[in-house]
Amino acid sequence: MTDIEVVDLLRAHGIRPSAHRVAIALYVLGNETHPSAETVLRNVRERLPVISRATVYNTLNLMNEKGLLRQHPFGPGTVFDSNVSRHHHFIDSETGEMRDVPWEKLSVSGLDSIKDAEITDYMIVIRGRFKKREA
Image 1 (cartoon, rainbow, N blue to C red):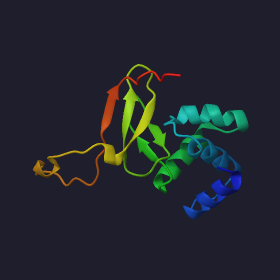
Image 2: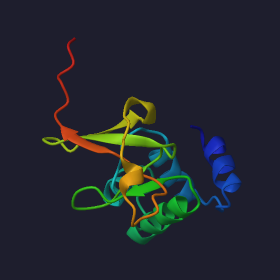
Image 3: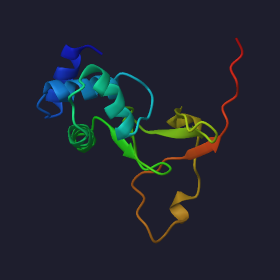
Image 4: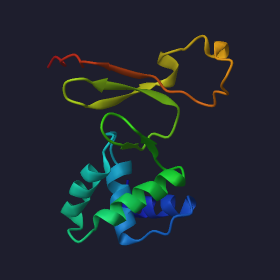
């Protein structure tokens, strides 16, 4: 994504685009990883060394609130996901790497048997090991 595309996207979601917010959005929306706020801070500081931890956390929370990101409490902390469409996750149990699994690849049955809850959404989290890719 370019700076201009990010500025337009932020504005479309009701977020005032500052230089710091644009830098954060460029990093988070520009890749398929599921970074923690600390990972975002570390990477954005390479572009903007003066950015504060509070600005990163506040911006990520605002982007989540406005629907640009989804926040997931995986493991010991929270990660941010730029894929806001419905999907599942596969987490490598050794490396912690997380990848999206398309929604249509998995199905769940029996949700209607849960009588004491109104289910509005769900997500499957699979843990295992990624197979080594052959060259």
